[in-house]
Amino acid sequence: MLKEHARTLAVSIFVLDLALVALAFVGAWWLRDAVLPALAPRAFPASLYPLSEYLPLLPIALGIWGALLLSSRRYASQRLAPLLDEAWEVLRVCGSALVIFTLAVFALRLDEAVLQDARISRAWIVIFAIPAGVLVVT
Image 1 (cartoon, rainbow, N blue to C red):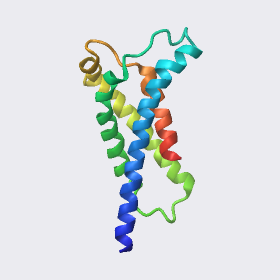
Image 2: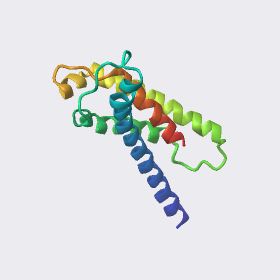
Image 3: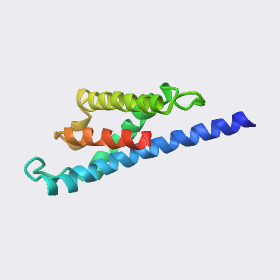
Image 4: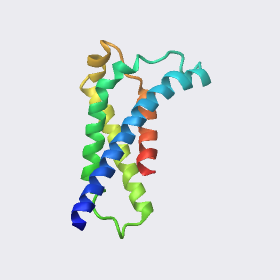
């Protein structure tokens, strides 16, 4: 019975983590498209393509983040693990996910497939990884 509850809790936390990554995905688009051009128009002169154009990348991002989070064994019992070590592991996973996601987008030319001969904003990718890491650690 306790193992079943522990498994249910681990799955719930994993689903919550993926929901937070999805929230960071959308939030990063909004931040890069609306907020940053208003704050720094010289650095961010153009707005992004519509969010609907970016959404096909969301399952890829969730797959990468999910696979790395699961492989980190973060959802096993952490009773003796220091909180700082666990936070560092999550940030390492998010950094690795950022690198793999970026490589997947540009090496596989997913940006051209999604945006028809255009490029995904590199700033958006970095902005996406930062809140994803912060939200999952939190």
